[in-house]
Length: 91
View 1 (cartoon, helix red, strand yellow):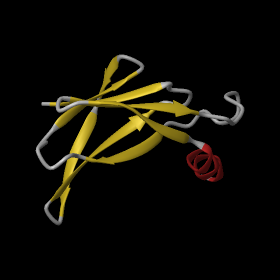
View 2 (cartoon, one colour):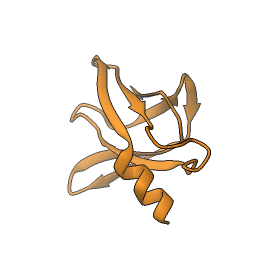
View 3 (tube, rainbow, N blue to C red):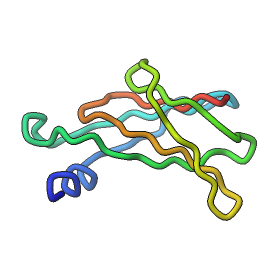
View 4 (tube, rainbow, N blue to C red):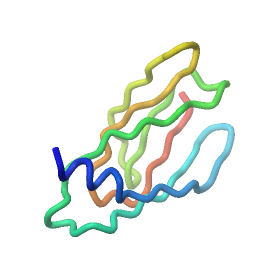
């Protein structure tokens, strides 16, 4: 649990290309990859015009779930450690 918390605090997420159909992010993991190798669950609030999406991690499709809370949709995706790019694509 401690590794997960440290990894989550250290992860840097930077916004990349945005369009009506997709949103991309760059990820950087500054901690030692041999020790901090736990996948992190990331939550992203979907734009109002999106009801659902798929997630791509370093170009590979990943399982993601969309949850609705108080009228707001959010995507949850388990991102493997050391992932470089994360992209959400509107369904």
